[in-house]
Image (cartoon, rainbow, N blue to C red):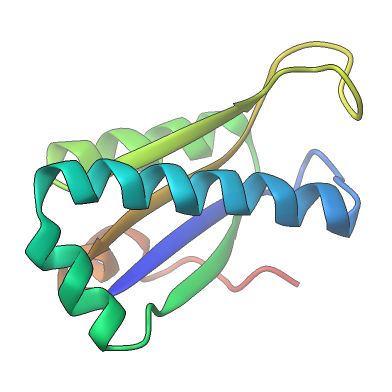
Length: 116
């Protein structure tokens, strides 16, 4: 079991901003999963709540992975920053997928690189 968070690298967010956006995604996806399956969240917690943060290079790529994950029956949380601090307008920043079985998520995100 794991959760994957995809973060847009093209936005050049400062590390703190990037982490805050990723946390928004992680929490939102977990809450959605909890509504759907308490057992799935329980299993993920018991396994250590693994999270992997990966990079995507554009909003288009972020949206494509969101749709692929949804089409595969995975729970997603697409985060749009309100545009009140770092950005001048609402901006899609990241996406969380899961928690769910590693194999299901890897079919979608397995070729993406870790964020650096």
